[in-house]
Image 1 (cartoon, rainbow, N blue to C red):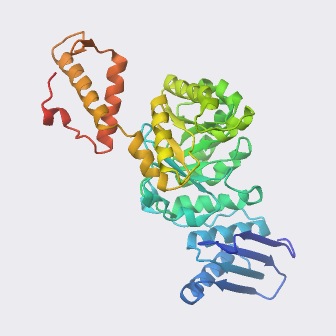
Image 2 (image 1 turned 120 degrees about the horizontal axis):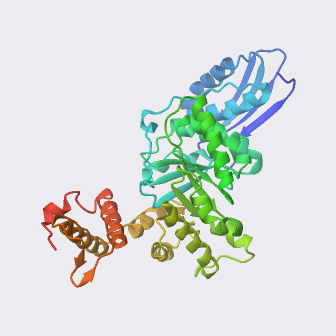
Image 3 (image 1 turned 45 degrees about the vertical axis):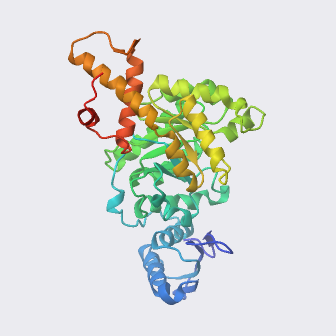
Length: 409
């Protein structure tokens, strides 16, 4: 143990909620001295003190001064902040893990809908706690750009505990790691705790994804894990755009690829505009690379959280370009994104006619499929079936739609 080493972590001050600030100093004698300042001290002061004493005992600390400034932190947050401070003081590598919620034991499918993915700063617990009730397709706990450099180390503990203790309500549990190679260390705090998907930012080569997968496989072997961890690289530079297909086809567990337009436009020395002419080439490259590789193309975020009409138009343009979803930075964006990426009634009816015609031709042993006077090519049928599958998965169409409508073309 280091003498007179004072470690601080967490957040305090005006506007901070569901978090706490910790100051820990190990001492030579005097036992355990804890000072607690909490907004909820009357109701939860005893339980906070009990948890702090148990954490210190777990790490065999018998002499220390601990100051806690609490703003309504939940136990998993308290545990993360205390563990970081204790491990920094002691050099211990022991983990003090909250119980894994039964609700968080699920895996996700390769081809699930990824219309929306909600970004949440990985060091801001109040935004994590109820994010799942907004029903995004994915929740991203962000360890990269949303976390200040001097907070990244402690954020890992908070994100790890959130993966175990926060109910995601079925959303795909995603984490954006830091840029490789720095982000490889982040994986140690994620892979053993049932993260579903890793976002790899500023990806510029297949080699970066292979490094991520090598670390994942080592951790899976160490912890005897069987589940697949999906990857979503993010293209954010000219170099990444020019290697888009190489990146999209780098590994079997790459299920989607996103583009980040803020960093991309900065990289090509221009600014991002609402019209998007400056990024049309890059977005088209990402879409084509993804389709060629058989994965989902995911568009960038729309940054004006107050402009719902602008968001709608952006989603419609994105969908028209071939994207399957986009990022969002506020829960109010989720509904607009879902409504406008989902197939509309006209698309569904058209798809039903195409698929029904294809199925009827197959039943009759016909080698040629037509709808009215037009021939139907296999890619058209494939696209129509995708619309049908999506409509069924979203409850917009019955699984037995053909029998129920008795639709014969």
